[in-house]
Every structure is written in C-alpha cells, then in structure tokens.
Image 1 (cartoon, rainbow, N blue to C red):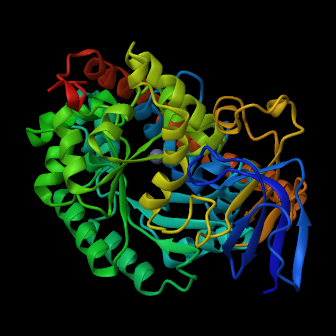
Image 2 (cartoon, rainbow, N blue to C red):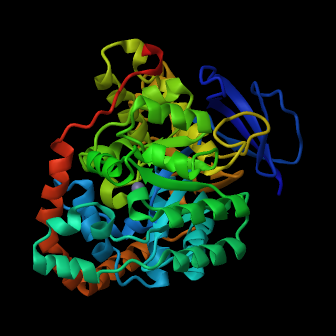
Length: 498
Ligand SMILES: [Zn+2]
C-alpha cells in the first residue's frame, strides 16, 4: 500500500486542544507523522489536499444492534423498553441470512455516513445464533470497511419468564400463550457461540467476535457463567444490558435480593472484559463495584430518552473511574445511528443531573468517551486519537459548512453543533470508505431497493406475530409501570460526596 500524505488539514490532536494546520502521513493503515505543513518531505506518496477540512478521530459506537436497521420506524411513539421487547421478536422475525446481512449493511452505511468508524454490535438471531448469521453480519461490516466487535445476543428466558411476577400478572388465556413461548436452552446458545468463536474467519484487527447475553434477568445464572467462561477461554469481551429500565432494577432486587451489578459481581462477571450497556439505575455501590473491576459502561442517551428509560449517571461513573463509552443503541429504538447527537445529548443531559457546572460533562470528557472510551470497551487499542502510532480512522469535516462558520473552537463546535451534516469523507485503516459524500465500497441505491423489498416481505410475514403480541402490550406496560413508579433506593451520590 503506498503512503498517503493528507495536506494542510486542521487536525484535532490527542490533547483535544491543538487544532492547527498540519500534514498527516499515513502508511500501512497507521498515522506515521503529523507535522506542520511542508515539513514532511517523503517521496512516493499519494497527496490528498485537505484545506478547509477538520480531521477528527472516527467516532466509536459502544453499543448498537445491526438487526435494528431493518426495524427503523417499526417501534411506535411512546413505547417503553419492556413494551418494545414484547414485540421485538415479531419485528425481527422470519429473517433469512441475507436479511440479516442487509440489516447490518444498512446500519453500517448510516454509521459511516454519520462519522462512526467502529461499533460494538449485539446482533440477535432467533432462536439461537448461527455461524452463518454472524459471518453475514461481519461480512457486512467488512464490505463497508468498518471495524466492529460483533456479539451474538442471546437469552434463555423469554420476557415473560424473565420478569418475576409478570407471568402471574397475565390473565389465564394470555398466561397460557406466554407459557408456550419458549427460549432456547442455554446449552444450545453456548454451543452455537462456541462454534462462532472457534471458527471466526475475519481479520481480528478489524472485526472481533464478542458475547452478548442480552439482559441478566433474561439469562439464567448458569448461562451467564457459561458466557463468562467462554469470554475467558476465547479472550473476547462481553456486553449485556444492565439496569436500563427502573423496572429491571427493581425486579433484579426481587429476583436476586441484591442489585443487578451486585449479582453480576457475585457471579464473577465483572472485569475488564465486561461492559454494561445503559447502566441507568445504578447506585453508588454499583458504580464503585464497576470501577473496582475495571469494567465499562456505555451511555446511550438517545435510546434512553426515546424509551423513557432515564438518564445514566455518566459523570458519577467517570468520577469513580469507570471506563465510559457512548453508543446509539439500535436504529429501531434510537431511530438512527448518530454518534454526534449521542455526544451532544450526553453533554447536555449531564446538566440536568446537577446544578453545579463543575459536575457537568465537559466536551473533552464526552468526546473522549465517544472515541477512546468506546474503543477500549470494544477491545481495540490504538484507535480513537489522531496521533502517530494510532490507526488512521479519521473523519474529515468540512469547516466551510455552516456548523463551523465562524470556526472558533473546533471541539466545542463539533460536540455542541455537529450532527453529521458537515462530514465530507471518512477513512478507516488509512483507506477512504466515504469520499466527498460518496460511499466507495457499496451501491447505496441497490441497498435501498433491497431494503424496501425485504421490509415489504418481512412486514407481511410478521404481521400475524405482531398482531398476536398486541394483547400483551398494555399488560406488560402496566406491570412495568407499577415498578417504575415504586420507590427504588438508587443513590445518586457522587463518590466525592461520601
Ligand atoms: Zn441495546
């Protein structure tokens, strides 16, 4: 691969303050040098002029679901988490391997178009994950040129057997129907996951396998333990949704007699491989447990607002030393894959949690979480910064765009004002995947035609299942609402208040 010299760009350096004009030398996928214009005198380089471009590290999405791509627009207005979950099997039903690939492709297209160069993808297949399915998802990432941690999302409980008291709260006819819905036994999922992990044929510098037991309440302890053992055996990371809704946190107390995080700690799951998606209803002890274990939490502010789940204590997590990442969650519950919006929401939501401006998330903290923080949670090193020795995963923003006129403080403007509209090009591993607004590795018009056709077919195939899920909707909603309204002694004490 020939070397490339990107000339005269404004480059946001790793201190997130310096942003002067510079030339950037890229070779073998790495940033080799960043120097004032004209100083790099290397010959035999492809020169790319980048005047009027602001170069920033590619954003890293710490939590998404590629299966949500084909589910865009399917989740109604004013739908809380558990009500969404009561219909999600039907929304994702009847998919062929090609549909799964297509859903991941659609998700990747939006990720790249909105400045994301890597993502942690918990992808669901029913009833159990398959090697073909996960390969198709990884192939979709590879085709676009993205990095990813790809995790089969698995459970051995249904929603109805997962939430203590829910089955009993259903009227007899619906209870009978709910009892007939069965999750696959965990041994089947574990052996499928093992098959996926031991036959991973993708370049691990770009695509890593991971594990995604979906939600602790939805997994038996034996299953969670088997996942943890697999993660250890294969050296992969593990992510699960923790305390995303208040109902989850309360029902966790009912089921385990302790908080969800305390339960995961008792099982031995917490550690540097572990990350919790959402982590909203945590108390100060949970936060300390996560920090002590070197575990991560991925903040998903958009999805959390869309589902009315709450606001994660991001500042307290950072303060305690928990590794913080930022994610979008799936396009079905987040309505898109916009990490710029996720950053802005993270910054702004921290301001309603505390009146003390010293306790608001700063733009530096938010940007680091959305780059280096998420990268560490995905298990990739040397991404998330523009610095020699780091991978050349770079977003080129047009500073002629109205978002940057006048350009006064690039970092502040990109966290508070950017929405993806000023993205001109995206490079991953030293190669352009989006250039001057055009995706280079995929025919978007073809993908659109395929998506429209697939959705028409799948919506028809799933209509009966969606109809069958309908009577559960209000009952699940009311059951969880009662828990959401009841008191939960979550202490939002900040560690330095102790
Ligand atoms: Zn999620």
